[in-house]
Picture 1 (cartoon, rainbow, N blue to C red):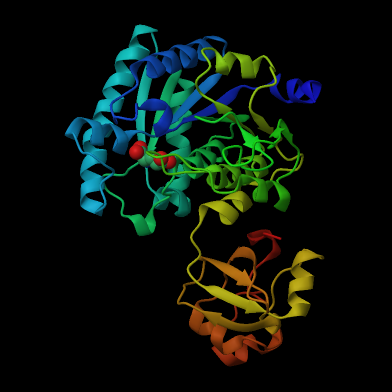
Picture 2 (picture 1 turned 45 degrees about the horizontal axis):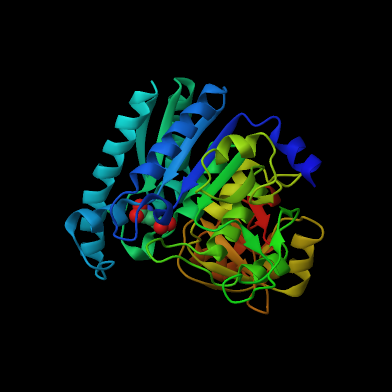
Length: 377
Ligand code: GLU
């Protein structure tokens, strides 16, 4: 096991480190200065090793709650946003001050889901990250909580950090949290729970093991971390869930010490555009396809033809990403659609040779080309 892990970690050149609210704040909501100082010192030291570092930091809402003296997490959206607006400034002030002490330059990047789901904005964000990394800057990322509302949020920084890891092509994503890693059942309720050191592949069993453990001030639980694992590992980044409390945890990880739960990057990462289609986008509608088309897509990696389409829902334009469902209503993939929803309604179930006659034009024989399609099963 140990050997395996060392092998994967020996060539790490770029890491994304995500730190949760429960690690950064005391139960009072005020900043845990010891932990923050220790974190910045470690990140600076990792940077000194010649490894590029991106920090995804939660804690804006938590720090805002502390500063505003609120007794509990705010419930309404404007209150949460106000807390985030206050807290994000406090966080950045602290990071900037501490990174400067170690001679490092920090930068703030606040992202929204739309910065990821819109392909142009996604590519722009990638360019910004690369420009910063090239100049030796340490980007500090959070969701733009003061602006976005719940319906369009990532909602948790586990998912956000995994998207960032794929966006910057990181070799490793480290989730620093207040638990040691993943157990085969909930250790708080089952004293016989066994610790899992190494995950080769995120199976249904691993998802089951994640249960519903969570923390009081943060948003994510183990499930969001496992989902982050799916996003990260399929993009070619390994992931570690580890207790952020240890004084030298990042160097220990990079030295291959067997701490936390390690999720191995897949040997065949999804091509960048397909990864974005699978995890970055918010599909604008659904297309249900028949069993024959499902087989053609999944087993034979074929394009989707109008003939295989049973029904559609939602309104979408040509070029948008839509979700593909099978007859059991299970999502089997995402793809970029060649016709708008009203045209699809007209040509569904037909032979491609009939498209022109029905629509008065034909730009493509296929509704979704195999190159623009990613299967999720
Ligand atoms: N973006 C939120 C914050 O900074 C945290 C989300 C999370 O806890 O994952 O407060």
